[in-house]
Length: 162
Image 1 (cartoon, rainbow, N blue to C red):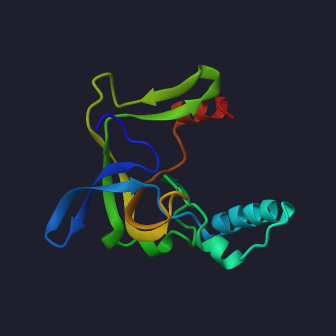
Image 2: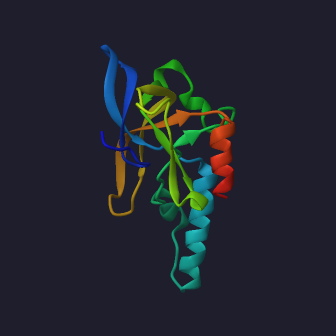
Image 3: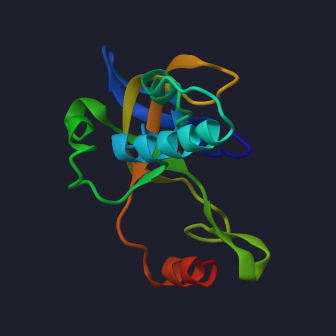
């Protein structure tokens, strides 16, 4: 694949019914209910300010959820349902980027200049939600990286972009 971006298909390796399988999943696990609730409250407020009536339950059900691409806090209650072996995967990669405004855009990282294959630990799930308003409700295999705090080199890049 020439590139993988959030909310697009990414290759993953997972255990399927017949054993190990290479497949694709949309990058971004479901966001937490708090994140969705906060976004819905904000949207409801804007609609109400325009004098429109709001069915909050329906608004919440249809709240776009582009997902979480990198999961750092696995101790969060939200993620525990997907931490078992049946939801584990690896995500092959040869490089990744962090956006850095000071550097004028993405800063790329790889194991070396030849960009050899490496893998991130990940989790996946089959989930029904609204990813994009124009698509409506869809059911997708989703995935995300499991990460830790960044090393010094990545941290320095991320810190400069804030």
